[in-house]
Structures are given as C-alpha cells and as structure tokens.
Amino acid sequence: MDLKTLDLILRIVQVVVIPVVGVLIKLLLDQRKDQRQQTKTLAGFDKRLTTAEACLRNVPSEKTLHELALTIQNFGGDLHVAVEKIEGMGRIVDRLERVVTRHEDFLLNGGK
Image (cartoon, rainbow, N blue to C red; front, side, top):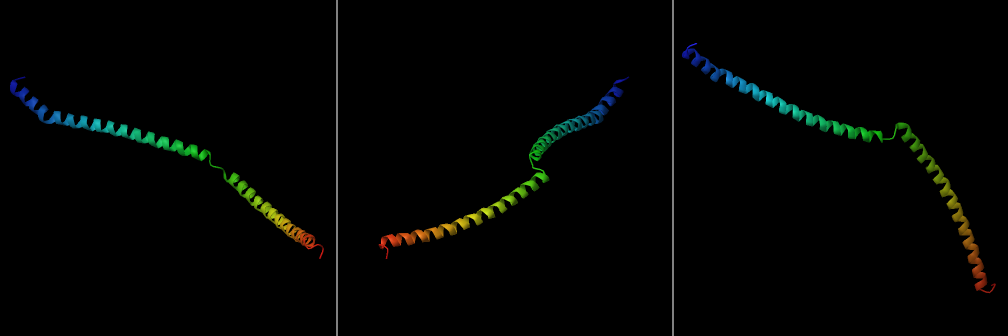
C-alpha cells in the first residue's frame, strides 16, 4: 500500500466515516436520554395510578350507598313522628299553662 492510497483512505474516513459515526453516536445517546425520560414518566404514571386505586378501594359500593339512602329515609320518617309527638306535647303544655294561669289568677284575686 503506497502513501497516496493511505492518504485517500484516511481522507475518506475523515470526511465520511467519522461524521457518520458521530451522528450514530448522537442518535444512540438521544435515544437513551429519551428512554430515561420515558421511564421517569412511566414511574410518575404508576405512582398516580397506585394513588387512584387506593382511593377507589375506599369508595363505597352502590349497594352500600343504597342502604345508606334507605337509612336516611327511615330517619326522616322517624323525625316526622318525633315532630308530631313534640307538637302534641306542646299543645298539652299550652293547656296546662292556661290552667295554671287560671289558678294563679284565682289565688291572686282571692277567689273572685
């Protein structure tokens, strides 16, 4: 191999091979960087999904919500009964107050 051929080969390597290898190395490094970034993004999604699943485990079922609604409805009925009883007691207290007032008036006026 003579010097001209060696010189030609080195120039071809310098002009063609080295830039191509450089571009390939840059692409490889960019790809690795993207993979690391995607891994971080997936880890973030995994954490969010785990949190959402934990929250959903504590959500009551449809059956439980229905039972709760029925219980609240029953309390409403019981409350109406209690209100009616209290109103009845209020009428009794009003009558008792009128009787006591009449007795007080009788005693204050000396039986007149």
